Image (cartoon, rainbow, N blue to C red; front, side, top):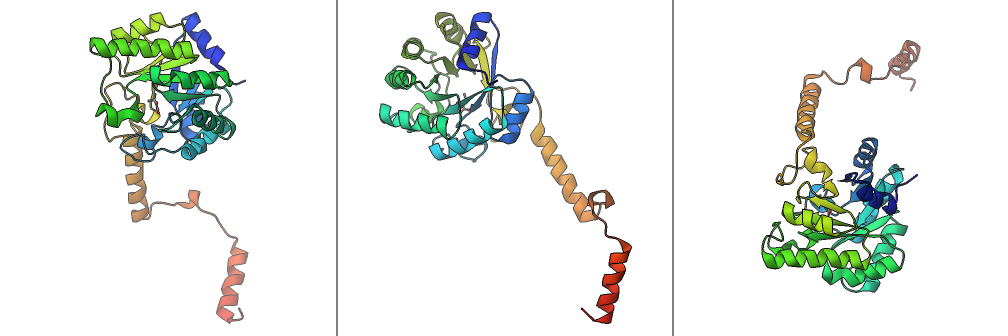
Length: 283
Ligand code: KIV
């Protein structure tokens, strides 16, 4: 049985930390489910770690649907959150409804995530009223990187901290079932977490959040353009892959691969017949 937003909210009430991981394809989704992660985010970070863009801005709704459909197809238990990409929900509530409906109907996700606080609260309300569960995302909202002028910590000054609190209150009042806090000082994230009844999921927001989300490629060492301060490398899979590929190249060049164990035989009778036919010139 797939987990629901209620199961995730109960984890906050029960004091159980919520662990979310991004997943973009069959391997990342299957491995995350095997590790018993309750919630997977098909994040538009795929624009950076899969597509090689410098930001998430170029990602389209069709691309998100494609990746959401893969992740939902190969998993049974985790709640799948589908990210609404840049400019697919902020033009009008109608546009947001159409985009979210496509992520749910074609991508199969159980809820959507969108970026923004007070400003998008009316859109969140409209989606929730229509039966679409919404995870909000405040603090550093990467789709606005061009507005922020970089991936910077948010809420360090009084005015921006006050705004963050207003954003948190607004998305909760609008009906969001959970909220991502990205690049927010630890103490401020703790304050928001205590203030809200919905779960906070931190990324670069300290240990006091109700849960954490990380990017699959970051924690496994698969993304080496830069290492965000908020991440921890739990494995260096990129190094292992590079070593394995170099070994493969050397083996092929030296004639050490494939061996008989990787090859297929043919019976001597068949070979003898072919040889005699070819020597006869009858074929
Ligand atoms: O797109 C994404 O992966 C995200 C996480 C970084 C929270 O929004």
